[in-house]
Length: 636
Image (tube, rainbow, N blue to C red; front, top):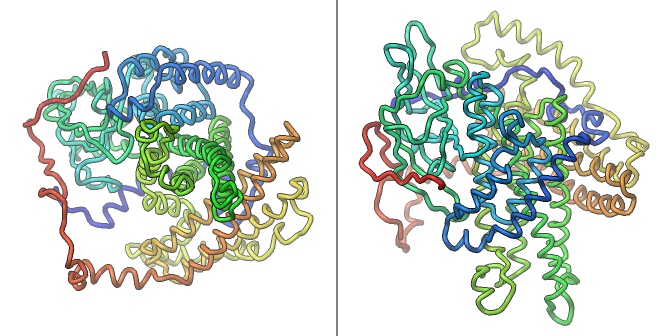
């Protein structure tokens, strides 16, 4: 395919993002140095109707998982049994987020998250199937952007069948400007012909319907662009050429799907031509919460295993929990499990209220959940020692409890890559975090801006910063009585307020120092985002602890202790990140990497053999008819 310049790629991404802020955002304000506690406190509460519907479903789901889902079979056979999928369908689990008028359950985001947390604790593969189907598959984009006719046609089917989302291609990941799959309108305008290859199509092996992102060619009459389509999975010309296998999630139905002259009715196009990426990104605003839901579930399960094992296992005459080296790990797991659930619940409840713009909060929840969830899984394996590295099947075979710690480590690793890798999430969130700055000063550093535009931007920036910068000097965080209603946690909230202003000042200093080169300072931007994620998690933990204290003083006392520990740990991480903003090896890393790429250090690779099998680094994905057997299967 044709090469795409950096500017062209950036333009595609910029046009796809939602540029306006119609509702307030706690996280956006946090990055601007404004700690708006009123946007998250009092802690949101689900409605009585949501609670009744959600709790009833969770009870049925729990019974089904306990009685009908054997995760050891899924892990052993690398496949979710058809009867499990049938059972999920009969429960209504395939339609959790679909409105009742279309045959779904109409669960709130909060209870959908709770359901995924429960499912993911039993089988992450089943959790991935449900999440890929409902968070990014057909239901969500059709619900948000579909016509009434599309909703009537596709949502009832999605409530009882499996769907998938197809964006990634063999040579296209998080850079959609290079998307090669095409959708060419027919002469009569009644349909489009799809050609191309899609990679890592989660659920694509068994899906009945798929959402496909394809590029409509630009013409004199149409601007074309990346466009979303609902496609029948058994359409002539569609071939699932391979069922992919991975480090973890061994039951996942993920494949390579080829489209060759696949006719798709124009009525199946979601939204206008060229709106596909905007639809995908908007869908992900809440769709990303599925991953932190499962990460929170894994952390809670890890805490249970760590607690029970540390009481059972003795070393040098003491339970291992009484040794400081292990106590530090268990304390980290307990505090992090509390924080991950607090972040998840807060983001889900804010999504249900729909009074806040949560695009940054959802992205932070995904980023933080996947990173901290991985650390929790790693620490659990370490606590378990050799048994943590041993498979559950092997443990059971020699008479011990089959704890799948190593499987959880493998299964949770993908969350740092799924739905936006950590590195991409850093850039995505950083773009939103500096939006206010670019809105007033962007033309100053834009090489294509005219002198007139630069002069106007300079005037606008001067007015903005004259009002904004003085407010970053002092605030409630310096007042000892601030947030006193939070008792022992008040000091942590004062820290968040101070750190928020420091974060905003640091961002401004970075922009002033690097200007147009700021977008290339990915190490700096990543640390800015990581600090914001820690501050968001601290805030969520404190408000959740206070909510629990008001509801149940005994549980609230426990929650306060966990929130206090988490905040103390997070403050250590924040202080380190602040220091690394300006003291780091980023420039040297880049220099050495350029030398590595040029082959200067190849001598260091001597003395080893490469066990990799021969083949291309990236498989050819030329359009055309398939040469492979179709491995798509229907769940019967």
